[in-house]
Length: 256
Length: 283
Image (cartoon, rainbow over all chains, first blue to last red; front, top):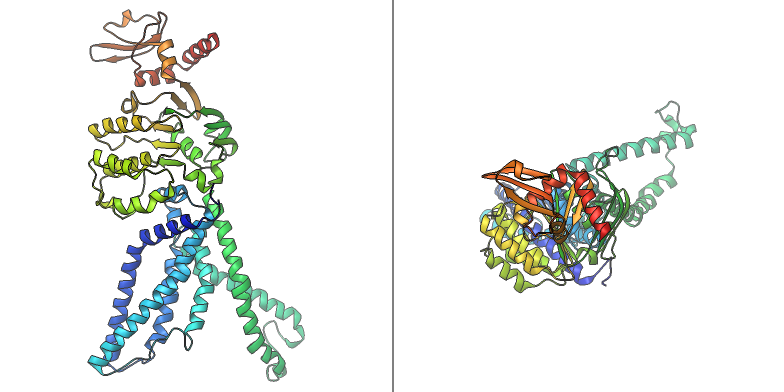
């Protein structure tokens, strides 16, 4: 009897199934995206405009495309016949979950970054040759790109959970859920601040003038440095694993 | 071996499809699961394969609980549903991708079955007709060599020669270790193939007998006049006379007509059940 949760050869086979069954649509979407980008590049190179093209478009391609792709990864669970095929496939829920996670997270990230890098080499060569204009070089390990990549790796889990939890229009419902969650958190945060720091308010929303103009240096330093770091650590090491765990249990529930 | 004890299941909370259903299915047989539309045939197959979970009661399939959906269990069963989605890949790619999930898969058998069905492995799955897709899935399912093969309306969409071929291939695939369950309402398509017969109605098992027992207890004959028949369990008009089923009082053998048997069981439940219970008790 093989391991009931994770078996190397079974997992590899499942990974192949995921990859080969879905590559056609993914390939078409990638081709369409980069054709559109090439069109933009040519227009901008002609006008010698927008040198930091990749600084804007790489995050859009990575985050936008990744969220769309991730949101559709469990769509087979929503269709009766494909659901039957998915559930009957001899692999554990953990293997099915993990293979889809790896494909949409690191798989998509590596693929997109590699293709984008090849695209920039090609597009820069064209713009230099025909328009005597070059865009900034794209290097995913420099400037703000590693942060964009970290943002994708951590926020991906939200859309992954959304794909499991929502039957239809998962990407829109996930965005809506994020918005609603942020609003609720903002209200709770405001009420917390209003209760704890009640003496700096002279109305329900209005902060006393003297407080506004005499900010506490320590507080500002805390907000700018320590709180930012704490937030990143909490997002990466607490919230993301929690969301992923919730996704796994939600998948088990949906499979039932 | 499949053991179902005291099974209850319903799609809606208030309306139960199965209530206290008991069933035992032994290896070495091709079971025919017959019933009207909505009798619960497909649901029972889904419960056995772990696609649905019982509300109450227990299902044991080859010492596995289907609802656990363990990979080793899933690798030893194969369900061919009536309606299905196929990936947009070639049959060759489908073979390479999915066969490794089934440890007992026999690629030579798969190739043989496909060539008998006149299907080319280079063809794209999604470009095939419904009948051709079904032939690919039937070939794949039989080649898996799994212990439990579940077939839901397998002859739907097959042309007449393919139905004959299907019966031939399936009959040659059964072994003492394997169980095939065929759910169908096209009973004529599975004549000479299924034995024993299970008839479901309104979520209950009305009838569960081997053909040998059926021929011992029932007699099937065509009569020219209705008044020749005597005490009949069921009869229906056919061209040139009446096809009737009566109690086999003389111990003669007759060829079982599955459609007449099905109608007799459904239309004359008490008498048939009493007859089989009585005979079983005497035996």
